[in-house]
Image 1 (spheres, rainbow, N blue to C red):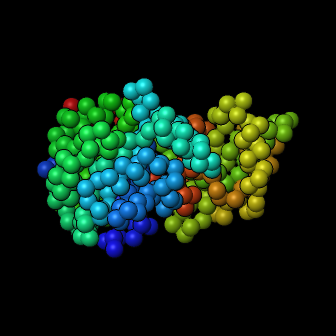
Image 2 (cartoon, rainbow, N blue to C red):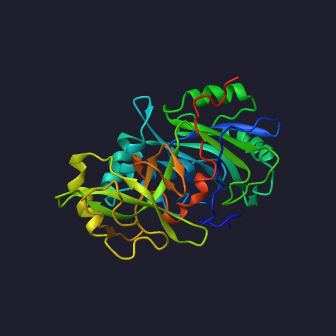
Image 3 (cartoon, rainbow, N blue to C red):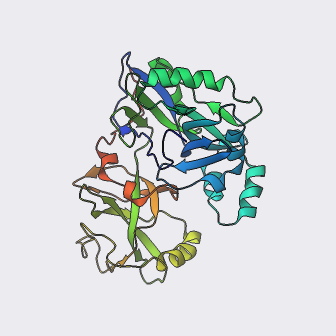
Length: 341
Protein backbone atom coordinates (compact mmCIF):
# COMPACT_ATOMS: atom_id res chain seq x y z
CA UNK A 1 0.00 0.00 0.00
CA UNK A 2 1.28 3.48 -0.88
CA UNK A 3 2.16 5.87 1.94
CA UNK A 4 -0.11 8.61 0.48
CA UNK A 5 -3.37 8.66 -1.48
CA UNK A 6 -3.19 9.60 -5.15
CA UNK A 7 -5.32 12.71 -4.55
CA UNK A 8 -2.63 14.16 -2.26
CA UNK A 9 -2.36 17.91 -3.06
CA UNK A 10 1.15 19.12 -3.96
CA UNK A 11 2.99 21.87 -2.14
CA UNK A 12 2.69 25.28 -3.81
CA UNK A 13 4.66 28.53 -3.93
CA UNK A 14 3.69 32.07 -2.94
CA UNK A 15 4.63 34.85 -5.40
CA UNK A 16 7.02 37.45 -3.96
CA UNK A 17 8.81 40.60 -5.11
CA UNK A 18 12.27 39.28 -4.25
CA UNK A 19 13.68 35.86 -3.57
CA UNK A 20 14.66 35.35 0.07
CA UNK A 21 18.36 35.02 0.87
CA UNK A 22 19.87 32.91 3.64
CA UNK A 23 21.36 29.54 4.48
CA UNK A 24 17.91 28.10 5.09
CA UNK A 25 16.91 28.49 1.42
CA UNK A 26 17.42 26.28 -1.63
CA UNK A 27 16.83 27.61 -5.15
CA UNK A 28 15.46 25.73 -8.15
CA UNK A 29 14.34 26.69 -11.66
CA UNK A 30 10.61 27.25 -12.01
CA UNK A 31 9.75 24.97 -14.93
CA UNK A 32 7.14 25.93 -17.52
CA UNK A 33 5.20 22.67 -17.83
CA UNK A 34 2.57 20.49 -16.14
CA UNK A 35 3.09 19.90 -12.42
CA UNK A 36 2.79 16.18 -11.86
CA UNK A 37 2.90 13.77 -8.92
CA UNK A 38 3.88 10.25 -9.96
CA UNK A 39 2.67 7.34 -7.80
CA UNK A 40 4.07 3.85 -8.33
CA UNK A 41 2.61 0.89 -6.47
CA UNK A 42 4.11 -2.25 -7.95
CA UNK A 43 2.91 -2.52 -11.52
CA UNK A 44 0.49 0.39 -11.22
CA UNK A 45 1.60 3.94 -12.05
CA UNK A 46 -0.66 6.96 -11.58
CA UNK A 47 0.13 10.46 -12.80
CA UNK A 48 -1.80 13.25 -11.11
CA UNK A 49 -1.95 16.96 -11.95
CA UNK A 50 -1.86 19.79 -9.44
CA UNK A 51 -5.63 20.15 -9.73
CA UNK A 52 -6.22 16.47 -8.98
CA UNK A 53 -6.91 15.46 -12.57
CA UNK A 54 -5.53 12.19 -13.87
CA UNK A 55 -2.76 12.61 -16.44
CA UNK A 56 -1.97 8.89 -16.71
CA UNK A 57 -3.59 8.21 -20.07
CA UNK A 58 -2.07 11.30 -21.69
CA UNK A 59 1.57 10.42 -21.00
CA UNK A 60 2.03 6.67 -21.60
CA UNK A 61 5.78 7.03 -22.12
CA UNK A 62 6.17 8.52 -18.61
CA UNK A 63 4.05 5.73 -17.13
CA UNK A 64 6.32 3.13 -18.74
CA UNK A 65 9.42 4.98 -17.58
CA UNK A 66 8.32 5.21 -13.93
CA UNK A 67 7.32 1.54 -14.03
CA UNK A 68 10.93 0.65 -14.93
CA UNK A 69 12.49 2.38 -11.91
CA UNK A 70 14.20 0.17 -9.34
CA UNK A 71 11.84 1.00 -6.48
CA UNK A 72 8.47 -0.75 -6.73
CA UNK A 73 6.84 1.78 -4.43
CA UNK A 74 7.55 5.51 -4.55
CA UNK A 75 5.94 8.92 -4.94
CA UNK A 76 7.68 11.67 -6.89
CA UNK A 77 6.90 15.37 -7.38
CA UNK A 78 8.03 17.03 -10.57
CA UNK A 79 7.15 18.70 -13.86
CA UNK A 80 6.22 17.28 -17.25
CA UNK A 81 8.00 19.00 -20.14
CA UNK A 82 8.34 18.45 -23.89
CA UNK A 83 11.55 19.37 -25.68
CA UNK A 84 11.04 20.24 -29.34
CA UNK A 85 14.23 21.10 -31.19
CA UNK A 86 16.02 22.20 -28.05
CA UNK A 87 13.12 24.40 -26.90
CA UNK A 88 10.55 23.45 -24.27
CA UNK A 89 7.15 23.60 -25.96
CA UNK A 90 4.06 24.12 -23.78
CA UNK A 91 1.71 23.89 -26.76
CA UNK A 92 2.81 20.30 -27.35
CA UNK A 93 1.88 19.53 -23.75
CA UNK A 94 -1.58 20.99 -24.33
CA UNK A 95 -2.03 18.79 -27.41
CA UNK A 96 -1.66 15.73 -25.20
CA UNK A 97 -4.94 16.48 -23.44
CA UNK A 98 -6.86 14.78 -26.24
CA UNK A 99 -9.76 12.30 -26.19
CA UNK A 100 -8.34 10.02 -28.89
CA UNK A 101 -5.93 7.37 -27.61
CA UNK A 102 -4.44 6.97 -31.10
CA UNK A 103 -3.55 10.67 -31.18
CA UNK A 104 -1.92 10.46 -27.74
CA UNK A 105 0.17 7.43 -28.77
CA UNK A 106 1.30 9.20 -31.93
CA UNK A 107 2.37 12.34 -30.05
CA UNK A 108 4.07 10.34 -27.30
CA UNK A 109 6.29 8.77 -29.96
CA UNK A 110 6.93 11.87 -32.05
CA UNK A 111 7.35 14.29 -29.11
CA UNK A 112 8.05 12.27 -25.94
CA UNK A 113 7.75 14.07 -22.64
CA UNK A 114 10.43 14.44 -19.99
CA UNK A 115 9.73 14.15 -16.28
CA UNK A 116 11.88 16.57 -14.29
CA UNK A 117 11.78 15.46 -10.63
CA UNK A 118 12.39 17.84 -7.74
CA UNK A 119 10.98 16.11 -4.65
CA UNK A 120 10.58 12.65 -3.11
CA UNK A 121 7.40 12.13 -1.07
CA UNK A 122 7.69 8.42 -0.39
CA UNK A 123 10.34 5.76 -0.80
CA UNK A 124 9.07 2.22 -0.55
CA UNK A 125 6.20 2.18 1.95
CA UNK A 126 7.80 5.00 3.98
CA UNK A 127 6.38 8.51 3.70
CA UNK A 128 9.00 11.26 3.47
CA UNK A 129 6.66 14.24 3.79
CA UNK A 130 7.48 14.86 7.47
CA UNK A 131 11.19 14.96 6.72
CA UNK A 132 12.81 18.37 6.04
CA UNK A 133 13.58 19.23 2.42
CA UNK A 134 17.31 18.77 3.07
CA UNK A 135 16.73 15.07 3.91
CA UNK A 136 14.26 14.54 1.06
CA UNK A 137 16.70 16.07 -1.41
CA UNK A 138 19.56 13.82 -0.26
CA UNK A 139 17.41 10.73 -0.75
CA UNK A 140 16.19 11.98 -4.12
CA UNK A 141 19.76 12.57 -5.31
CA UNK A 142 20.69 9.02 -4.31
CA UNK A 143 17.67 7.66 -6.16
CA UNK A 144 18.46 9.73 -9.25
CA UNK A 145 21.81 7.95 -9.62
CA UNK A 146 19.76 4.91 -10.62
CA UNK A 147 17.64 6.72 -13.22
CA UNK A 148 18.21 4.95 -16.57
CA UNK A 149 20.53 7.06 -18.72
CA UNK A 150 18.42 6.57 -21.83
CA UNK A 151 15.09 7.45 -20.20
CA UNK A 152 13.55 10.89 -20.08
CA UNK A 153 13.49 11.23 -16.33
CA UNK A 154 15.93 13.63 -14.73
CA UNK A 155 16.71 15.38 -11.48
CA UNK A 156 15.93 19.09 -11.40
CA UNK A 157 18.99 21.16 -10.44
CA UNK A 158 19.11 22.90 -7.08
CA UNK A 159 21.54 25.32 -5.47
CA UNK A 160 22.12 27.32 -2.32
CA UNK A 161 24.01 29.99 -4.29
CA UNK A 162 21.97 33.11 -5.16
CA UNK A 163 24.36 33.80 -8.05
CA UNK A 164 23.34 30.56 -9.72
CA UNK A 165 19.70 31.42 -9.11
CA UNK A 166 20.35 34.77 -10.81
CA UNK A 167 21.67 32.93 -13.86
CA UNK A 168 18.57 30.74 -13.99
CA UNK A 169 16.37 33.79 -13.69
CA UNK A 170 18.15 35.37 -16.67
CA UNK A 171 17.23 32.25 -18.68
CA UNK A 172 13.50 32.74 -18.08
CA UNK A 173 11.58 32.31 -21.30
CA UNK A 174 13.73 29.38 -22.40
CA UNK A 175 11.70 26.68 -20.68
CA UNK A 176 11.75 28.20 -17.21
CA UNK A 177 9.68 31.20 -16.20
CA UNK A 178 11.39 32.14 -12.97
CA UNK A 179 13.02 30.80 -9.82
CA UNK A 180 11.65 28.90 -6.84
CA UNK A 181 13.02 29.19 -3.28
CA UNK A 182 12.30 26.40 -0.78
CA UNK A 183 12.97 26.20 2.95
CA UNK A 184 15.48 23.42 3.63
CA UNK A 185 14.31 22.96 7.21
CA UNK A 186 10.59 22.45 6.56
CA UNK A 187 8.58 19.30 5.85
CA UNK A 188 6.52 18.91 2.68
CA UNK A 189 3.50 21.18 3.22
CA UNK A 190 0.72 19.70 1.13
CA UNK A 191 -1.51 22.32 -0.49
CA UNK A 192 0.23 25.17 1.33
CA UNK A 193 2.35 28.11 0.10
CA UNK A 194 4.22 28.91 3.31
CA UNK A 195 7.45 27.04 2.60
CA UNK A 196 8.04 28.05 -1.02
CA UNK A 197 8.50 31.38 -2.81
CA UNK A 198 8.49 32.10 -6.53
CA UNK A 199 9.58 35.01 -8.68
CA UNK A 200 8.59 35.20 -12.34
CA UNK A 201 9.84 37.43 -15.13
CA UNK A 202 6.35 38.61 -15.92
CA UNK A 203 3.26 39.05 -13.84
CA UNK A 204 0.68 36.44 -14.68
CA UNK A 205 -2.56 35.17 -13.18
CA UNK A 206 -4.73 32.13 -13.81
CA UNK A 207 -8.35 33.23 -14.12
CA UNK A 208 -11.73 31.62 -14.60
CA UNK A 209 -13.72 32.68 -17.67
CA UNK A 210 -17.01 33.62 -16.03
CA UNK A 211 -18.65 35.20 -19.06
CA UNK A 212 -18.11 36.86 -22.41
CA UNK A 213 -19.28 39.74 -24.56
CA UNK A 214 -19.91 39.71 -28.28
CA UNK A 215 -17.91 42.08 -30.45
CA UNK A 216 -19.78 45.17 -31.65
CA UNK A 217 -22.21 44.37 -34.47
CA UNK A 218 -20.93 40.81 -34.57
CA UNK A 219 -22.03 37.29 -33.69
CA UNK A 220 -18.48 36.48 -32.59
CA UNK A 221 -16.90 36.84 -29.16
CA UNK A 222 -15.24 40.18 -28.52
CA UNK A 223 -13.92 39.75 -24.99
CA UNK A 224 -13.76 37.25 -22.16
CA UNK A 225 -14.75 38.27 -18.65
CA UNK A 226 -12.28 37.07 -16.06
CA UNK A 227 -12.92 36.02 -12.49
CA UNK A 228 -11.14 34.96 -9.31
CA UNK A 229 -12.53 33.19 -6.27
CA UNK A 230 -12.58 35.07 -2.96
CA UNK A 231 -12.14 33.54 0.49
CA UNK A 232 -15.86 32.73 0.67
CA UNK A 233 -15.71 30.77 -2.58
CA UNK A 234 -17.51 33.47 -4.58
CA UNK A 235 -16.36 34.20 -8.13
CA UNK A 236 -15.64 37.92 -8.55
CA UNK A 237 -15.28 39.68 -11.87
CA UNK A 238 -11.75 41.14 -12.05
CA UNK A 239 -11.19 42.20 -15.65
CA UNK A 240 -11.34 41.27 -19.30
CA UNK A 241 -9.31 39.68 -22.09
CA UNK A 242 -9.67 40.54 -25.78
CA UNK A 243 -6.19 39.80 -27.11
CA UNK A 244 -6.92 36.65 -29.05
CA UNK A 245 -6.47 36.15 -32.77
CA UNK A 246 -9.32 36.97 -35.12
CA UNK A 247 -8.99 33.56 -36.78
CA UNK A 248 -9.61 31.87 -33.41
CA UNK A 249 -12.86 33.72 -32.68
CA UNK A 250 -15.34 31.51 -34.59
CA UNK A 251 -14.21 28.29 -32.87
CA UNK A 252 -13.96 30.04 -29.50
CA UNK A 253 -17.47 31.46 -29.90
CA UNK A 254 -18.87 27.99 -30.61
CA UNK A 255 -17.14 26.60 -27.54
CA UNK A 256 -18.37 29.41 -25.29
CA UNK A 257 -21.97 29.01 -26.44
CA UNK A 258 -22.00 25.42 -25.18
CA UNK A 259 -21.04 26.68 -21.71
CA UNK A 260 -23.62 29.48 -21.34
CA UNK A 261 -25.19 29.07 -17.94
CA UNK A 262 -26.27 31.63 -15.30
CA UNK A 263 -25.16 33.14 -13.06
CA UNK A 264 -21.54 33.21 -14.28
CA UNK A 265 -20.16 35.36 -11.47
CA UNK A 266 -21.43 34.53 -7.99
CA UNK A 267 -19.71 37.48 -6.27
CA UNK A 268 -19.01 40.85 -7.90
CA UNK A 269 -20.50 40.82 -11.38
CA UNK A 270 -19.65 43.00 -14.40
CA UNK A 271 -21.36 46.38 -14.23
CA UNK A 272 -23.27 48.31 -16.85
CA UNK A 273 -21.87 50.75 -19.42
CA UNK A 274 -19.16 53.08 -18.19
CA UNK A 275 -18.52 56.63 -19.32
CA UNK A 276 -15.74 55.26 -21.50
CA UNK A 277 -17.85 52.75 -23.41
CA UNK A 278 -19.98 55.16 -25.43
CA UNK A 279 -22.85 53.38 -27.14
CA UNK A 280 -21.12 49.99 -27.10
CA UNK A 281 -23.31 47.31 -25.55
CA UNK A 282 -22.14 46.03 -22.18
CA UNK A 283 -24.48 43.04 -22.22
CA UNK A 284 -22.68 39.83 -21.32
CA UNK A 285 -23.35 36.11 -21.39
CA UNK A 286 -22.73 34.11 -18.20
CA UNK A 287 -20.72 30.90 -18.38
CA UNK A 288 -20.37 27.80 -16.25
CA UNK A 289 -16.98 28.05 -14.49
CA UNK A 290 -15.18 25.47 -16.61
CA UNK A 291 -12.45 27.34 -18.49
CA UNK A 292 -9.17 28.59 -17.03
CA UNK A 293 -6.87 30.98 -18.87
CA UNK A 294 -3.47 32.40 -17.92
CA UNK A 295 -3.08 36.12 -18.63
CA UNK A 296 -0.44 38.78 -18.19
CA UNK A 297 -1.30 42.14 -16.67
CA UNK A 298 0.42 45.44 -15.98
CA UNK A 299 -1.49 46.90 -13.04
CA UNK A 300 -3.64 45.48 -10.26
CA UNK A 301 -5.54 47.65 -7.80
CA UNK A 302 -8.93 47.89 -6.21
CA UNK A 303 -9.57 44.20 -6.65
CA UNK A 304 -9.29 44.18 -10.44
CA UNK A 305 -6.97 44.51 -13.42
CA UNK A 306 -7.01 48.18 -14.27
CA UNK A 307 -6.32 47.61 -17.97
CA UNK A 308 -6.97 44.81 -20.43
CA UNK A 309 -4.93 41.63 -20.04
CA UNK A 310 -3.02 39.61 -22.62
CA UNK A 311 -3.45 35.93 -23.35
CA UNK A 312 -0.62 33.60 -22.34
CA UNK A 313 -2.34 30.23 -22.75
CA UNK A 314 -5.34 28.13 -21.83
CA UNK A 315 -4.90 25.98 -18.72
CA UNK A 316 -6.91 22.74 -19.02
CA UNK A 317 -4.56 21.26 -16.40
CA UNK A 318 -5.74 23.67 -13.69
CA UNK A 319 -8.98 23.47 -11.70
CA UNK A 320 -11.12 26.65 -11.70
CA UNK A 321 -11.35 26.60 -7.88
CA UNK A 322 -7.56 27.06 -7.75
CA UNK A 323 -7.92 30.50 -9.35
CA UNK A 324 -8.00 32.62 -6.19
CA UNK A 325 -6.94 36.11 -5.16
CA UNK A 326 -4.03 34.57 -3.20
CA UNK A 327 -1.89 34.41 -6.33
CA UNK A 328 -1.98 38.24 -6.53
CA UNK A 329 -1.18 38.91 -2.89
CA UNK A 330 2.46 39.69 -3.69
CA UNK A 331 2.22 40.82 -7.31
CA UNK A 332 5.62 42.00 -8.47
CA UNK A 333 6.11 45.50 -9.82
CA UNK A 334 9.15 44.51 -11.86
CA UNK A 335 11.22 41.37 -11.99
CA UNK A 336 13.98 42.44 -14.37
CA UNK A 337 16.11 44.11 -11.72
CA UNK A 338 15.27 41.56 -9.05
CA UNK A 339 18.86 40.57 -8.35
CA UNK A 340 20.40 43.97 -9.00
CA UNK A 341 23.23 44.74 -6.68
